[in-house]
Length: 267
Image 1 (cartoon, rainbow, N blue to C red):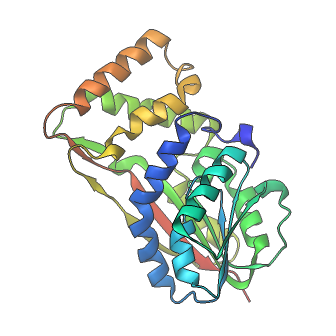
Image 2 (image 1 turned 180 degrees about the vertical axis):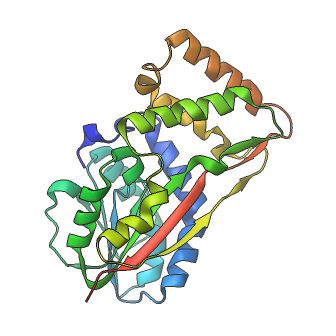
Image 3 (image 1 turned 90 degrees about the vertical axis):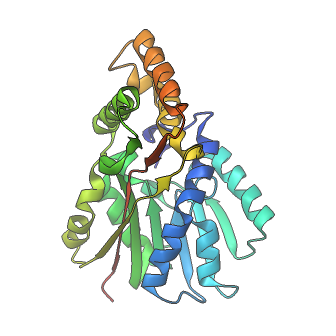
């Protein structure tokens, strides 16, 4: 996963966004791991962990006898992750710079491989799936998490600027990535002979919740892509109107749907 292939790589806003994102979705991660079962002593991999990823929930899941490896291609993200690991005292977590598509990690060396929001921005689902299955041991588990934008709404309506901004962000992902890959997760597993499980989560965001600002955070990280669909004046206008909509009293929302699937590689 080279840096220039990731739509949001290198953006100044990415660190804050990824840290907030990880905290919002940690409960969903814990619920999924509870369904998978006990992880004590396991060796697990968090692909593209960014600034925080699943590092904390995996550290809890494998316990003091297990090992968590977090990888990323971006030095800045790994530095932030290292600070997080140190602050949290996660002694069973190691961080490694690694390119998923040219990985130096040993094949079949992990009991569980996790990848969140990796397929949608990259749009290389088959190549990614092959890499995950190469790294997981026979009998091990691959976990995929990606978004489905269908539930991403703001209330009470109307919110025309926020709705348009979300639609244009979808256009950017569709041109360079795969915004609806979550709907094909089970099909991807079946292509490799795996009958997978699936679950989904949507979070309600009360007024003032920082994750309500996600469309504007994306608009910063994806500005170059958005400017292929509109000029700077239109984008600035859309941002200003979206800001005004968010500031209206009582504004709340629902997140995109987090689709989670997991399956076991044949022993």
